[in-house]
Amino acid sequence: MKPIKFQTWIVCVAGLFVCLPGCAIGQKEPSLTNDFPSSNSFPLFYDKIDDISDYVLKCQIPQGGLCRMLKEKNGDSSGSSSTSFRQGFMTTYCFGGTALIKAYQMTGKKEYLDGAKKFIDFWFQYQNKEKDRFGVVGTFYDKYIDSKTGEIKNFYYDEKESVSNKGGPGYDASDADGPAIAWTAWQYYKLTGDREFLEQYRENFKLILKSMQATMDSNDCLTWCHPNWPVKYLMDVCEVWAFLNSLENIFTELQENQLASDCHKWQEGIRNTINSKWWNAEKKWYYWYQDNGGNQNKDIDWHKWYPDAAEQIWPLLWSVTSPSQNETKIMWDEFSKNVPNWPKTAIDWPMFAYIAAMMNDYDKASTLTANVLDAKLKDTGLIVNDCYFVILNCCIDFDLTGSLHLVGGSLKSANNSLGFSFTSISDGSGEIILKVAEPEKTRICINGKLQINNITNNKIIIPVKMKAGEVKEFTLNTPSTAEKKGK
Image (cartoon, rainbow, N blue to C red; front, side, top):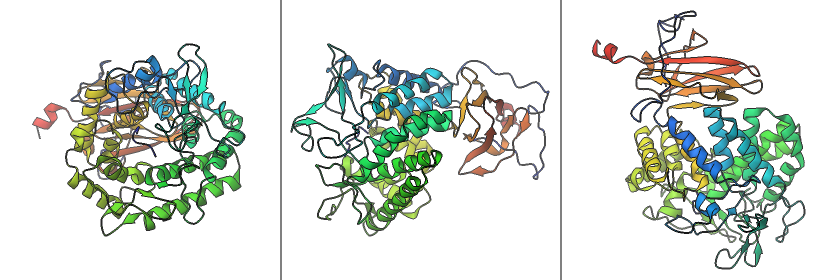
């Protein structure tokens, strides 16, 4: 169990496809500047993606591992931190690789993608291909880098640090720590289409699945978090669901059809258990743990942030549930009612802004994101895992998905305009997602062709198909101030 560690556009003209000013092929595109938008313009937080991603790269050691925070890499134990100090500490339960992958998608800077691959390569060379000291195969012991020799060593735990790992090397959770590498690998493959990369680690992915199966309870499909700690946590089992989803996709690509099917069925079992046995309909919250006797927590205290209140979002955070699901709506209403000041206080939990955006609570999402950036942007104690969610939050009003990625240095913006080039490494597809104040009056063109799309949940979603290496041009024009005054 992990204390945390852890729009725009569409013109509806009676259904007709019309070429509006600024979108006609051959017509001069609107003038754009090279300046990033101010904090009060669109996109709101985009210009902070580089700052966060560069911090993640600073936490990377030459061999590819990512330290939990820059302070620990630098051996600086001074000041405050939300977790105990461990010099040079590294674990597979690290979202820094996925943070760098997302940063590459949104900026086109290849050093971010290269850093992510180094991270994946680093950990696969340390996978336990034979049974570890707990009898589980496919796991990864936590590591640290010796500040004097530069050598990578297993991190040894004493009883004070970890009862389940005392007396030797270990990991926080066998069910969810190592599998995070498979999740990172899938995100990398979605952007690159690098089939050789998947083939290279085919057997490693199989071993990761075995490490997850080692503590699975066939009665409910949930996992004990550690072979030496038979407790099921809501946080961990939701992550297991998400990482199984990545493994299913990987095995499908590798034509390991039986393994893909096994992963899919297991996911269904987890989802069914969480929806039917871990939701307390009467009290309107999720149970957050269950011991090996089948006993669950009898109550939660909404004023106790972790684990009681914080873990409530985990089913939605990892897509076990959906924003439209009734239980999700009830949970979010209860959380918002009982913890009303979270946008000001949850600066160590940026994933709550991501959840708020999913629930269309954009004002609160923006408030927390702004507070996190203000408090953490220059903090060497910023946890790398949090950087992933901060980057996602910086995409709150402008996002790319699938195989699409921005061409580096191409994004330009003016007061009412946005333009950029985008491409794809392999044949693929994705979406351009934007959110602006007046989506029905916003004009969007791709390669000069006006795009007509439906507005969904206050967002405009433009699906795009791409050929390998193809480059397309995107332009967006929102109503000018003069137009608004003249209404």
